[in-house]
Length: 571
Image (cartoon, rainbow, N blue to C red; front, side, top):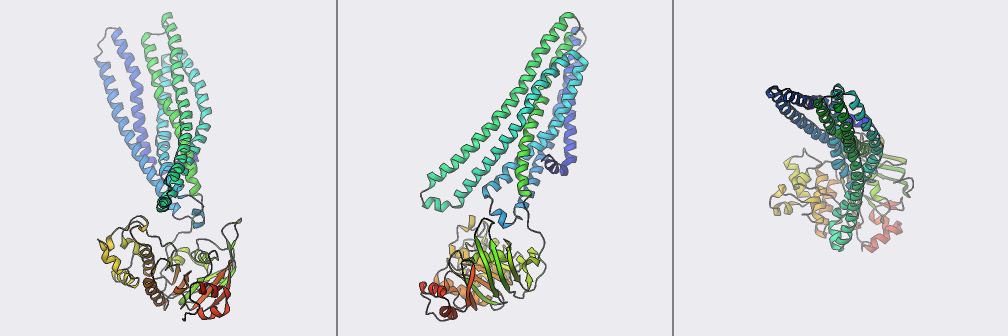
């Protein structure tokens, strides 16, 4: 983990060196002050002019302050840049993870890793490491200066500091464990809050506000308790450091006073030594604080590394593809979502020829939506073969495969932003004519004319300002603008009224003339005119045919049609 921390430092090493040098100069100026104070005392005792020593003392104070301030600014700026780089890298990794891995993670915890965990890196990589180096220099410098004053008093000081330093070292592992638990608790709190916010209307409609507030409050309480544990161990380390200096002061004052009384040590030297002793408070405190921050940084780095170590999807730019429609073949495909999960596909076989409309129907849990997840390669099938456009799906570069697909999800997500941004989300290079055509084909004209700013109107978080049917039509228009060779529609008409459903059926039928369209439908009215219908049940394909053929051949399809009053409907 220390090596991983240093990886984040490497791009900023030059500016850190400059900032560190400024800090060292400021420290050197501080080291000179007790010695200059000795000269002032000596001048006063010897009845010499004090103007010169006082002037040098003033210069040392001013130079030390200005240089230290410059070094501190550089460190803070570098810290912000380190956080920026860590957040960009982590977000880049998160958005390239496999869907299967993201499904196992909590969005709130992921957000915590990007925000609070990366913030901890700033403290450890600037204050914790670089400033600790400066503090070590100050400590060594002070010890050298104290050695020139009196070796006996130095040994007394080092003996006390060493004993207390050993005790502080024993606290560091406990601080790291407590910090890790505290950061995990913050992630858990983010997860439960995200759960409530994602289902905000459901919470309101269910009258569950008090219950969800209590759940989040409990998580916040656990985060507080673990944070207090960190504070307790950290405070104990700080108190031990303070006590070390105080005990050393008492010991030095006793031994030094005896040596002054015996005439073996000058009063000015004792005063300077005591000043250096108090000067040790800052560097020792900084070293202890740096050690604590290092434990925090290691805990944060471990959580960040957990995400960085997850396998990412291969990157690449999609090659220019032809507009020719492509077919799909499933041959004895088997798939389950985990080794301990039941089979979702158990020998699924069917063919979707290029061009035309193919529908997947069947009861819930039959494995229909999983077909789309496997075609998009959100998940990898465990057995059998899937062929897309005459190539095994695993032989396709991932970017090229997805560039050939247009996918409309079941819940038709709309992102925060303007209507134009949502429509062009998958086709940033679409022309205005293509955009207007897609709007007209999906009957979004009325929506655009009603919105106060037309296409530039913000649609709210998750498209909350649009109706369910409008969100579906936006998602379909987005897929059409992608100029896909294979169009995947998952329950694309589930929230449309009868009039718009009929119009959309016309759009799909028109698209199917030169594009392969694969539709998942619970409402059979949307697919009675399909070129072929694949009936799925229990992870298998039980029948394939047209609407009329299946009415006569398959009991399940006949039952589905009968419940929807379609048993006698012609093509």
